[in-house]
View 1 (tube, rainbow, N blue to C red):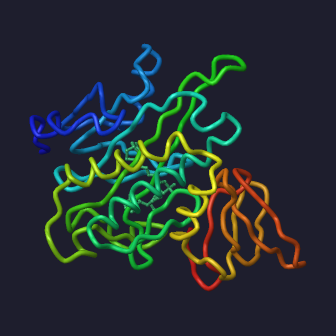
View 2 (view 1 turned 30 degrees about the horizontal axis):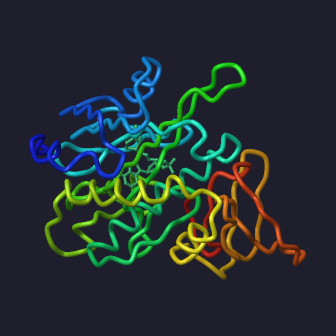
Length: 264
Ligand code: BT5
């Protein structure tokens, strides 16, 4: 269980984490955040759970959050941050914030575009962005983040699409979940107002997994092979395709893998 008193004394971190809704166990923190958004909860609202019984990934995949071992939280983000047509970049912004917090522990984290954080090529965290519209108007944006912290929180290889790890397994020592949460929130707070900036692009690219390598992108309609060149300032992917043409692609593609590897 997370120490609620300690948590409250450390939040908000920047402008994030107030009000706080904490659950010892819940289905999915994203579902609660969406519900709160529909009731008019303010941007910065944080939903945190010690355990999720129906944690979700993208495309209705499941996300495992065993009790007492991981971080699972969802933040309500102000509509307009990022712009409505670039919501997908919030995935990479969430991944960047986790990567920076892990660097604070001395770990070298990589971002596997668009929404994964890797430690030594294994997935330690995932991001799920969900939004709702009222007619033409963007109504809410929820940024959900799950991080495997304690040893044993990462599912076994045969249970996942891409091998997983935990922060403690990578670090070889104990990690305080609350410190890590505050680190992620502080990083997010610093970047949320800086969409489209060169600084953000540089921060992303420094941590981008498989930069300069041959990769394959998977979309609902198509796949695309090319050499990974970097990201654009708005979080789309830059790559040189097989015809030698530089392309900038976004949410038409869902996932990326290096060409010499299975999994997504
Ligand atoms: C993700 O989806 O990586 C998004 C994960 C978001 C989880 C957070 S926790 C707080 C908030 N509340 C929620 O209900 N969700 C968010 P995707 O890229 O589609 O990856 C999903 C795949 O990751 C699954 O199909 C499994 O193969 C694998 N997986 C499941 N649990 C995992 C874990 N704990 N660690 C690593 N991989 C996992």
